[in-house]
Structure formats: C-alpha cells, structure tokens
Amino acid sequence: MFITFTKIRDYKSIIGDIIHTARFVGIDESGEPMYDNDKELPTLTFTGTCKLHGTNASVVRSPNGDIYFQSRRAVITPMKDNAGFAFFAKSNESIFNDFFDKIVDRYKDSSDKHIAIFGEWCGGNIQKGVAISGLPKMFVIFAVKLSEEIDGEMVSEYLPNQFWKDLNFPEFNIYNIYDFKTYSIDIDFNTPKYFINKLVEYTLEVEDKCPVGTHFGRSSINGDNVTGEGIVWETWYKGNRIIFKTKGEKHSSSKVKKIVSVDTEKLDSIMEFIDYSVTENRLNQAIEQVFTIRSVEPHKKHTGDFIKWIHNDIIEEESDVLNANGLEYKDVNKEISIKAKNWFFKYLDSLI
Image (cartoon, rainbow, N blue to C red):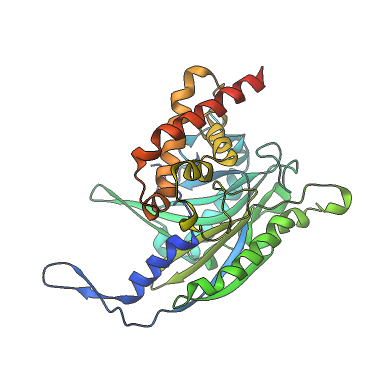
C-alpha cells in the first residue's frame, strides 16, 4: 500500500477552508450544506517549523509488521533507491521499528493500521544552494500518518505532533523537525490579511539564516551558504489538520511580489502569467521530479515528459490565479510549452 503525503498549500488556500468549517451548521433536506455567514470566525494558533530543501521520504510499517520505504511518489528499495534513502532506512530499520512501537503505545488505534513516518531526506548533494547542502545526509521527521483500507477506499489521518515530536536518533542522523527552532502566530480569520506582514517577517528570517543550518554550525561568518527555504505552519481546528507553507522568493515556484499572497490584479496578461508561473525554480523542480529521483538521464526524447510535468504542476498550483484574471488554461497552454521547451533544450546543451 502506497501512502501519499498531502501536498502543502499556501496561506490564501486555507482561508476558505477555515471559513467553511467555522460557519458550517449542517445539511438541509435536499442534502446541501448550510452555513451561517454571520458567525464569528476563530483565532487559531499556528506553530511554524522550518521547511527543509531536500526530497520527501517515508518509512511505513504495515499491520503485519512489514517495513518498507517510499519516495514522494513510489515505493523504493535499496536496489531501486531515491538518493540513498531506502539504503539508509534499511540500515536503521531497528530504530524505526522502535519509533513505530512508541507510536502504537501512545495511540492505541494505530496498531491495526499502516503507519507512515514522513520526513525530509536532506543534506549532502540532494539539493544545492541552502544552508543544509553539503552537511551529512540526514532524515528529519515532520509528520506521521495512519492509513487503512475500508470498503475498497483508503481512509487516512495525520497524528497530532504530541504522539511523535520527540522521535529522533541524532547519533544516526535521524532528527525531528521539532529539534530545531519553531515559530508561533495567532491568526484571527475575521481579518486574515492583517497577519501577512508577520508571516513575511518570519519567512524572511528563515530565508536569511536557516535555523537548521545554524544548529549544525553554518553561519555567514565562515562563508557558508545560510539560506533557508521557508516555514510550514500547522494547527488543528474541529478535528481537522490545517497546514500551509510560506516560502522566500529564492525558493518560490512563482515570482511572487508578496511571499504570502499573490497580487492577482497585476497579472493582467498572458505573458505576465507565463513570467509569473514558468520560473527557474519550477523548471528545476521538473528536472528533479522527471529525471533525478528516477535516475533517468535527461534527453531530448523526454521533452514531452518534462513539459507535461510543468503543465500539471501549474494546473494544480496556479488555477486560482488564472481564474482571478479571467484566463483559461487554453489561453496560456502554448506559451507555457514554448518557454519550457526552450529552457529544457538550453539545459541539455549545458550538460555537454
């Protein structure tokens, strides 16, 4: 059973979720949801943890005790690996088994489910240009998810961090995201825009000097790159896990003028949307996802796969911006392909 990790959205995306959850009052006779639009919205405390620039990885234990390993999109093995994570996790299987036992002991309902310990496999040469690049490879735990199949459908839930935030084994390069500096912010969702500046302030602090890199001795004094990627913010509301991310401009897939929310009024033409969405960082992400993690050598014959990844990612991440500017995907489809193709061909030339 492959256990997926839910894609983390941005701030503007979760505001609607909070509003619907807070104002939902039931189902009417025709089966339609009912909302009380005059109902006051909550103030929620979010905890922020450092977003690490590596590759998503996980260790999973099935109800019968089998342990296996995953990248973001596939089950992996030491023979068919992703940046060496499966080999690392297999070598430390007894440590992870102890982690699973602790989770079951703390949360009894997990004993008959698949348990996935998610984290970032980072450091070494997995990514470049950030404070943790070049450090010994490490696995940093940031989530635990329980899954089971009921009537042919996957049913999953994330565990609150009190059940796993102390799971680590630094002597073997297994850390917990809560081992490092965290942030906190109270957001009143009656006036969510008022909190953007504070989110930007925290995010720029991390981008300017990554707390995880600092923990391992990286500082601008000795000439090291100290850049951090951003922050992941999490809280729980009415039994739901609410999570979003804020990235600095150096790591954003879109050329945002505001780190937290895009000023959609300025995206008033197709070419502005192309410049906004088909960025260097998104193109490099495509290289990683289409080639690097699959150990495939980039070649012109894979141009279609490369362009397809770009299109799918933009559709998933930027459809709201298209809609806000009165654009349809057919309006930008061709120009996205042209820019992605030209960039890919130049990238291949640089490899010769």
